[in-house]
Amino acid sequence: MILHLIKRSDWLLVQQQGILTPPSLHSEGFIHCSTEHQMVSVANKYYAGANDMLLLRIDPKLLASPLKWEPPAHIDGSPALPGEPFFPHIYGPINIDAVIEIIEFPSMPDGRFVAPSQLNTFTVHNIAQTPQHWGEAAQWGFEAWAHEFPNDTVQTYLNLYSHSDGTSGRLAETFVAIDSNDMLLGCVTLIDDDELPGATEPGPWVAALFVHPKAREQGVANALLTHLVSRANQLGFKQLFLYTEDKQSWYEQKGWCYLRSSHLNQLPHVVMQLNIGS
Image (cartoon, rainbow, N blue to C red; front, side):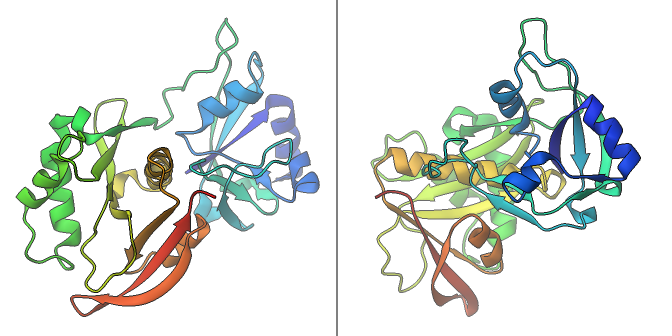
């Protein structure tokens, strides 16, 4: 699900008109939205102190207009920076029947916004900081990628996580998304070598991006990938690589480019590249 922030008075007009066409649709060509994970920081940046705001929870499957995931549009016109999160932009009006929930969103007495109870908020951490989630994450990885790596076991992933504290001398950092109840939502790994036969790319690689089915369409994958790209940029890398069996179009929406075709255990894959530095 995605969210759109709107003034109460504007929402009353939308209900009368049956369609949402905020000024940005005419000035920028799209309507700004956020994930549940992103909304509070957006509200505090642009609407601090406002007490007449509502959140529209939108089901992307019900939208009549195209939805694209893109870097933030900077007010000063400057280009997006490496590692910036991608936001959902709707290229056309929002049909009112795509709005499935209205959430009250007043600011606190000091002008700040905090996440209402209806939002599915989460944080991203290095898995070395969350040992309580190693077993579950390892089981997910084993089950999700067994068809590509049939010789791996749950212990394979536990061994991988042991490198995440940075003391082994190998680049293999796993990041996890955890909700406010300390439930594991998803994980991804930044690794020096992702074991693609015959690969000549220098790395590093994005590996094993996985989100639990119940946590999908909440921006979890986007947040994990954004965090990983930011970490790679912090480490001084200029390029990232990955290979995917069936998610090429999703990565292309995030700025990744097709590099070549390949095979892993006789399964066709696509190798992709992202430039993250000059």
